[in-house]
Amino acid sequence: MGLMDKDAFLLLKNFFPNIQLSEEEEERFKSLWSIKTFKQYDLITEAGSIERNFYIVLSGVQAIYILNEKGEKVVLGFSYTGSPSGVFDSFVRGEPSKIFLEALKPSKLLAISKRDYLVLFQNHPSFYEWGHHFFQEVLFGRLSREVELLTLTAEQRYLSFMQRCPDELKVIPQKYLASYLNMKPETFSRLRASQVY
Amino acid sequence: MAKLILTPENQIQRLNAIFNTVENLKGLPLAKLTQRVNPKTWSILEVVLHLNIAYGHYHKKFNEILPNLPSIEDEQTKFKCRAWQKFVIEGQRPKNNIRKWKMKTLKRFEPIIDMEKLNDKGAEEVFDTFFELYGHLKKSILTSRGKDVKKVKFASAIGPMVSFYLPESFEFLLCHLERHMVQISEILDELEK
Image 1 (cartoon, rainbow over the protein chains, first blue to last red):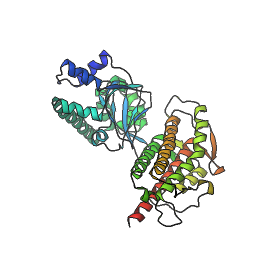
Image 2 (cartoon, rainbow over the protein chains, first blue to last red; image 1 turned 135 degrees about the vertical axis):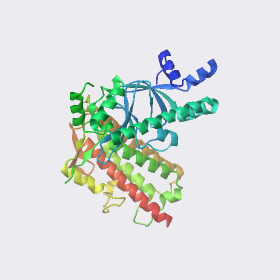
Image 3 (cartoon, each protein chain N blue to C red; image 1 turned 60 degrees about the horizontal axis):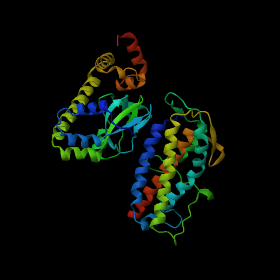
Image 4 (tube, rainbow over the protein chains, first blue to last red; image 1 turned 135 degrees about the horizontal axis):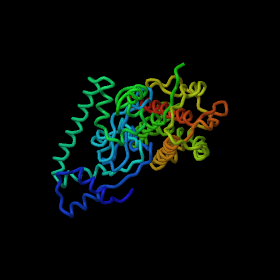
């Protein structure tokens, strides 16, 4: 666990743009977060265990995935620098996760425990507004992905994803990107070779 | 015969599910934990104690083998279980929550509890040991993700007629655990009647 430097705190503050805190409150807010470091391929959250933290990514790329009946990883999403991370349903419900969260690159995450996360809401009602917008965005993101998966061709899915995804995501092992886009690694590889992206 | 592909993630997920089940058993009263459905069968606590005894051989082996295995840079590829080992493993694995056949336990794996002296603390110790030992199994599976597991095989607790690579031994232990979780569920059902 590391100490939070200026840049990390700035990233944290930017994550909650409309929250106004006094200097004293800001110090207290800062003290609720810790930095967790993970090596490449470390399991941050295991299926079958309860997600204890809400994360904000300082660096690295992580994947959330579920195992299918053959034991293969089916990638549901990624998190990367500046984005939230964690297994939200397990975190909110306090029930064992069905999903793994794995570091695909060495990762540094800002973490807040469930207890401290709830303290934020209790002490500062403005976090409810943040929560409303946050989970609204999560829902819209998932809906948009569902539409893409159900309506676009493999090539269209590839292009749409490559246009919007950050560069750091483009260098993770191809099989994770292929799984996320619901295509075989060979198809992904062929599309990559034939496209600009 | 269909291939049996082993992955550490699948094994960790199943082991965590077993931990959740055993965690719930911890809260049961001593009378329930030690009650036998009939004199010839084990109580819940005896099953857990048997699981603790069964891990002994592997605890030692994993400590010997894992530190000496070469590390791998990339992700561990899927491990294909060998045919004879698959047969042995499948013998343990319950199907649809049913134990296919009952097995005679070797004398050295039989749990012996002195019921005269057993109290809540004694039962708690059995559970604590379970979590310690199988926590070691989980740690071993996690460590194996960064190791070349195809380098070393070793004799199972049954003897040299069954040798295991690490992923095969993890799977055997998991199926053995799952088999006994079914047994515990059967005991609980009987006790409820």
